[in-house]
Length: 408
Ligand SMILES: *Cc1c(COP(=O)(O)O)cnc(C)c1O
Image (cartoon, rainbow, N blue to C red; front, side, top):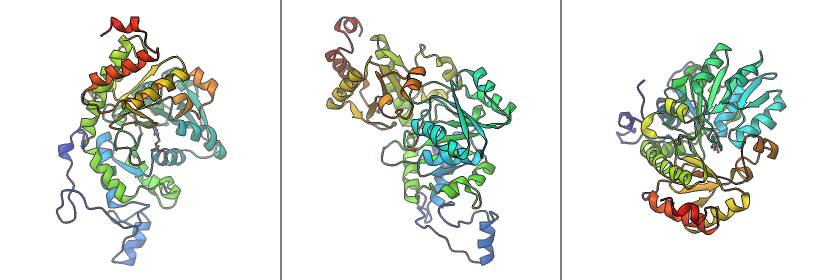
């Protein structure tokens, strides 16, 4: 499969209106037509290449969408104002009243809240399941099931979905497999393994500068056209459109994604190995101790590594908070939600990004109070970072001297 451009960035070629090396930003919400007939045809969806109104599409958004579709190996893509602005229309486009969804139980808190609390208002119901148990997934399918929903690498527990096996189940039962790939851009290409729709929150690694929210849904031309349809397209009608200026800036950041992912992965792998050998309970897909290590390896595009996300468990929320505050004091990173920034970001998901998930369910899925989620930054000297983190851990007793002294 020939990929471009984020992993073959040299192949990306867009010119501006006056031969500029960057595509011109289309700073318009509406577009003129030379003839009234063309305007009518465009409304009917029969005038290819004509722009109508920027909630429907705009040149800048199409540039970014095409670059992302090329990265994911899908026919096309639709960018949106946020990740949730991509997820919610995709779900509502594929499901109507009475329909049923099977979702991984470890997903982004906002997506969980949407499926658990919001879609039931439309009589759309979701079963949450351990997505690594394929027999459980298949057993839940009914004649009203429309979607299997998961994240390639789940938030925050870093469970890995067997996309190929899930795609086979989906095909067999005529369902759509929707995969949120936010945690593993470039590392995993879900569409190659059979996902029907691939979603990203661009807010995270892809944009990488924590200066905006954004999202994308990648899929077939037919599906993306359906999302944008002026009569019944969920993206068009719910209106979570990205602004052109922002689409242009995200496209510029996309050009360094391949380098950034390599560095995030390299740094995360270094720290994960150190933390684990220090005796900390460490979860990182690149560690052989991770239950889905071999599965990740089988799916991954090797050059980009196992990603920038890891978790450790320090035993209690108090210890987690103490450690995070100290790490922030030492300028090791920021106590902040989100991911994919140049600085390391850390948070305790149980009391923040996953707080939408009720406590009992958190316990059930192994989301413990002492869990700290790290998005590892682009640090140039990760060894120095590690040594400073270790001294924080020693000083508050998360690591014991005796334990650490014989580990280098
Ligand atoms: C952040 C995130 C989202 C939501 O994206 P927004 O851009 O904040 O709307 C969805 N899925 C995952 C995995 C995320 O990390």
